[in-house]
Length: 242
Image (tube, rainbow, N blue to C red; front, top):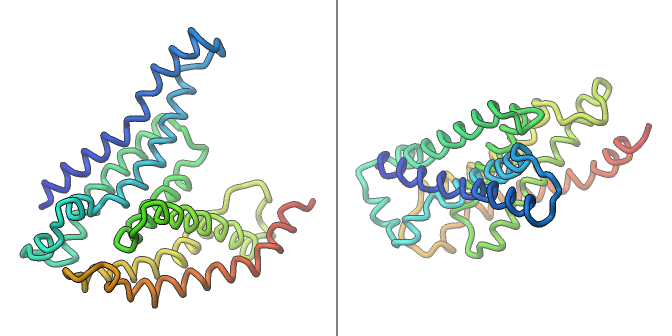
């Protein structure tokens, strides 16, 4: 199974590199049409940033793509493998290619802070992974991912303000402690709901297997949104003064 997942992950990885093909097109378009003197390095950086965002999003989203496409969940669950082993074989190769992208980002430095932005991409991957069993509409699914990632980022800013504001500038990114805490508040209940759903997953219709999301993930996210609303006005007032 691991070899199959490595092939699938490699295929997804290569598909997510397609935005890099825009580089020669953009260069020719600039040279012969708009004459803005775009540099190849700048075009590459923008295209690579798109790749960095697309890959963790799609890697998490499509982790069960082949099973959904071929209606093969019953076959997957009948394999003589434990549920943790199945998840490890699926998640491991995709994390490997995400790590490859982060090493490339470190080499070409499209980020000001590779550690923090790399952590953001890991959070994006985990959000998309933990939601992949729960969606029925792809549009709603991506809206959910966007909302939850925005919630994570905003909460990391608010936690930075609440816990470390005497020691920080208003103009820097949240420190890593704030990001870790914000990620834990969001990802722990989502991850628990995902694991319990997958652990009990069977051939029943998907809508009858979402109890963990309804009773664990949803209340936790609503509580997090409530706390965010409570503190966000104070945070914005502080961050826009002085």
